[in-house]
Image (cartoon, rainbow, N blue to C red; front, side, top):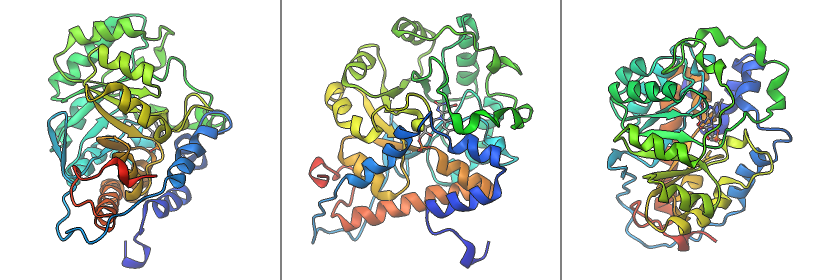
Length: 346
Ligand code: FNR
């Protein structure tokens, strides 16, 4: 791409991706559940938060680096788990893994990836975490997935708990059968397995069971209340992702950023807290960190980057967010991640 057409921000990637992708792929990626109230809230709640910068602080050197579960990243901006990257770009999650490595961050690979977990970890220079759902009546299937992820070198298991059923993403419902589902081979499952989801949603008892299967750290994704956050910590989660699945599950649910403070208070340092949903600017990352998140995950923008320019596009989306975060840290007098505190946000 020449300079003039190089996107300056994530929203420009969104527009280019919308132009490039087929209408049914666009609908699959963009959709939120039902009236998309929660999807919209994930953005509007960030816009409502006000920053209180402090000035004349020494911000000559900005350091965005941090650690997550003891693993080093260049910035607290991770790639959220999403299915079917092949819909956005032919190299699918292999391209995404390379992008995460280029940006020195962590890729959370979805159970419903288009490529196998072994291909994905082979393409990544940095840490890969494996996201799964527990929705097979035969829990042995889940055990196999964890074993494969662990053998492939994944460094954490992310259990997504907000999807006992799929939310009704109406924007996508009339066209989802037109999507090229056959091009994926699903990260840790025999082909076709994903469709066998057989209606046995997980409970806290399954979390206990899952913990006995692996020594890998457990991250619980999809928590939105203080009560569930306390339960997650009590059940041994090392981290929580405050998330409403990008507005794709329970419509009307609280925006992730509005749920963050109560979750942070409830876990009281017992586990790390991350957030996803609506992160589009470095200032959104800054606001999340100020309200107590240790990191954020980015979903749709990664697929926009992949659609526009493959692995390089996804890496550029991460680079833009990292650069915007560094700029926002300098402008608000917070030169290190540690210095980002609650007083920064009103
Ligand atoms: C998702 N998300 C998701 N989450 C998960 O745990 N497993 C998955 O397989 C998927 N798949 C998926 C596909 C697509 C197309 C999207 C857009 C989202 C949810 C994802 O991890 C994350 O929670 C949200 O995408 C974050 O919101 P933003 O950044 O997209 O606004």
